[in-house]
Length: 419
Image 1 (cartoon, one colour):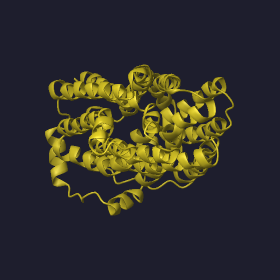
Image 2 (image 1 turned 90 degrees about the vertical axis):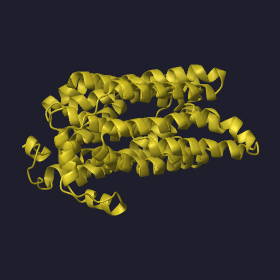
Image 3 (image 1 turned 135 degrees about the vertical axis):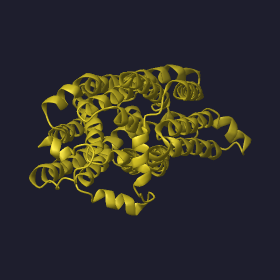
Image 4 (image 1 turned 60 degrees about the vertical axis):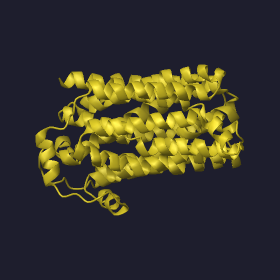
């Protein structure tokens, strides 16, 4: 039964990310068509993350209380509406004045709506936690990462091809995929929360999500350092992901189709890591060792990205960058699920997604300014500086003076498992 659920979740995440990645490489070109500058494009990408900053932790906590399945249905419905707004942005903008500013306003609205309801991945990760045991969780979450990567292999390529008939076409295809996803959850995905989990959640008093709750989580033993790592890693990786299309256009002269091919290549590399490599790595090394090694690898990879002179060199540089990113994304979330009680998993993953969204509010805006005002190399150097600081932080907080373990209850905690 668990394996069947994992396959279903894999298919749902794959379809979700396929739809998202259809429009990812095209959004800068789409916005540029209506007069958007690199700074405005950065703000457009950041608007999605800012909305997700608010929505993800709330959806995570709601899934702890009301179940994963109903929250997934609500989340995917918002995604459908967001893609439809994106596809109809030009005619809606024409109906409300016809100026480029009106079309851009609709683009912003579509991304904000999708961000507010876009807790799909967070709730899917919580679902995986519900149906896996302690030892197999990292491998199972790696499968989710593989679905993520597969979506990025196929989506950008298809989106680039579809763009020759107009930038709105990929948005409509993405809306159709999201609709298929909603139907898959409705008819094929059973609820994962057991009656025992629901009872535990109902009996445990919980404060509403707030900045104070986030601050408390950042200072919790074992949880806090992992959330700090998530934040700064998100800043560095978000710089790369959010401005890559602009970078490819300005430095390498790539069009939307060629950018889609390169992002598809990145997705292929991520699949190799999260679909096949992560299980072997977590069987041999502890999660904190993998986090430390990945921060070092990413520091040098971002420097290499900043200094890349041509497309062939970039394709080589993307190998270690994708490996480090794939490991970090999987291992951080796996570790977080092991340092909280079972009824806190959804909320904690929501906080993690919220911090990642916060980083993606800052990273696109900052990356757009750096690329436009300083040079195409500047975002990579800043990302390398952030990861270099993180190398020191991980070594100090996870190895030299780690926080004491939480009191034992339910599943064994990460600290005890790594002892």
